Image: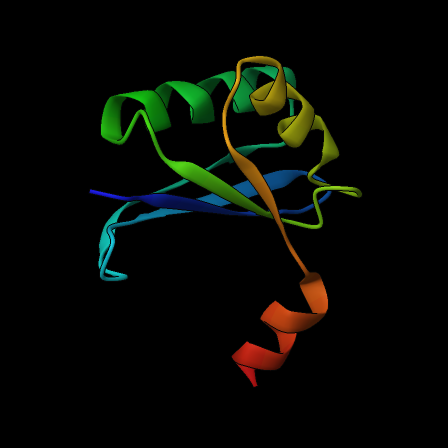
Length: 90
């Protein structure tokens, strides 16, 4: 099963949702934008869906720390363009 973990990083908070290959929610997570928070998010994801592809909104901005941490351990990380996710919310 192909799974995706989508992450919406903010200045102080990370929010994530894990989706199955049909778009159904497998779980969600919210925590601090800190080293401790990133480690907790990685642990949650490894337990729920260890081989997921990650989509991080703004991985070159607020999500950069998380994208670098994931990339360093060989995880497939994709950038989710913030303007596209904003268009979809409308």
